[in-house]
Image 1 (cartoon, rainbow, N blue to C red):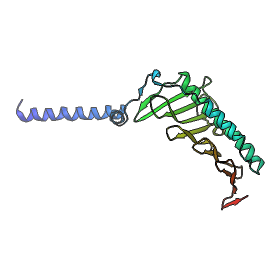
Image 2 (image 1 turned 180 degrees about the vertical axis):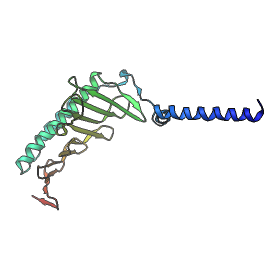
Image 3 (image 1 turned 90 degrees about the horizontal axis):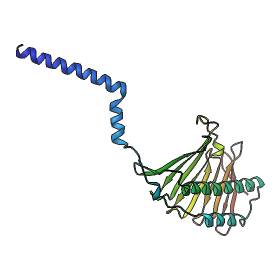
Image 4 (image 1 turned 90 degrees about the vertical axis):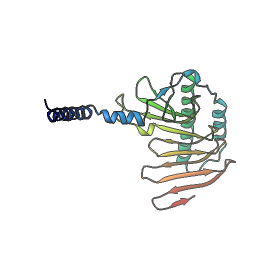
Length: 228
């Protein structure tokens, strides 16, 4: 076999191998998987022993006590909704902290994020938590409620979310997953404001100062707010 035939033979083999390689990569998305592995490395599960339990009994009690002292809005529906929302916020904060304290969750570290996922026994509720560090200081927690265990239909009005700021010294705000209610707090966990949206899309809001007195009570139409 002369030199030209040898070169032609090698070139043919290289082309065939290349085509087969492209086909295999396309079939199993190898290139995509390699890219994902390089850009998004696998999460690392952290030891449960690193989690430090936290007792928030005093914070919850202080929030409840302060809520009983605030000036009530003129709108009775506003008052009822605000009280329900504040109770839900307290209960969800306590639920998430107890979950962390129980040792039933495992914190994972991925791409600079400390997080954990929890599912209820009936597989209809999930809670996603984000932490400041591997010690388990909650930065954010979100509950989703579903119609069944397939997780296809979310019941957003039953879900909620909490966020914490300033090294977890205080809770800043809470809202239901459907965005129709929200509570904002001062750094000392005293309520700052509350809003809710009625069925016709009108937004009702109320704001308090740090002495529990109402600053402003409004009804937001589609154009501009009407103060009360």
